[in-house]
Image 1 (cartoon, rainbow, N blue to C red):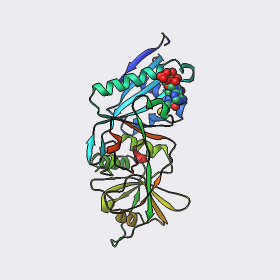
Image 2: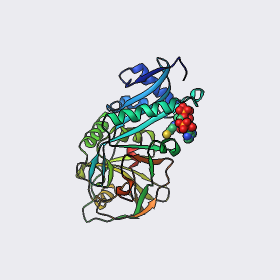
Image 3: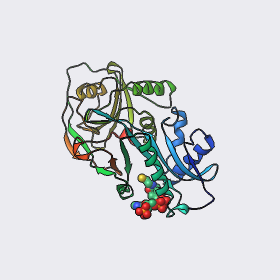
Image 4: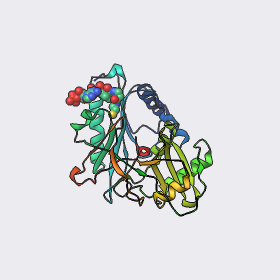
Length: 294
Ligand SMILES: CC(C)(COP(=O)(O)OP(=O)(O)OC[C@H]1O[C@@H](n2cnc3c(N)ncnc32)[C@H](O)[C@@H]1OP(=O)(O)O)[C@@H](O)C(=O)NCCC(=O)NCCS
């Protein structure tokens, strides 16, 4: 391991070092996590592990954070892992292996019972006990409802009042599924909404719910997530949204929606991996809402 590197852990309190990580992820993945500074800041539970060759230049990083999940009706104390990257000049020297081991040991010592991550390189993590969980979306007809159509208002996270509304609702939310969902976490929802301009956020005042959705070219309504104190039936959501959809695809288990869809394998760019959880007891089929992706 190069002797000139400085190892740093839990360094988000240092804005210079945080900027170093922002630059690393911008260079490697082309994403700007610096956007979080105007969305309420990074997840306060984040525990980054990194190597720096200058105070402001992060050359390798791997972060853990608290991501409590609801799995089969039980709250599971899970650690999420994200922001894994090494600058090209520093690869192949064991930096990432070192950071993964540090992060997994830290999570074990902190009492996390499970780990979760998304990756396009599952082999990297299989040796640390992570297993791929196949993901399914749920497709079916747009349900109808007798309730009168209510107004939906499109939200814009660059407007402070809309941002505050979404943050408040996410804070009070019921997990979107009782089978498999993130229990609490708003930072990734907000960041994902900013990263993908195709994601629309609608506020349904009558249901006091924020709906994250997309419309595909063939008029399928993709329901990505629901922020609400009580998850409403799908029929009330589609009626309130009032969109001319032919079909609906729900991108999380629809057990709270009073609606059934046909499970179809979901081919995302990344595999969902879990460790520390007996896979045979995992409800199937499941999917992690794209708004909880990290
Ligand atoms: C993947 C990446 C983080 C590896 O970093 P690195 O410092 O070169 O990795 P290390 O030298 O510490 O190697 C760690 C282990 O991973 C393995 N490995 C390295 N690159 C790999 C890859 N692309 N796929 C699978 N395994 C890989 C190594 O063989 C090594 O295995 P070992 O512990 O059994 O010897 C780095 O190539 C990178 O930043 N890539 C682009 C971003 C990325 O893919 N990040 C991971 C996203 S989940």
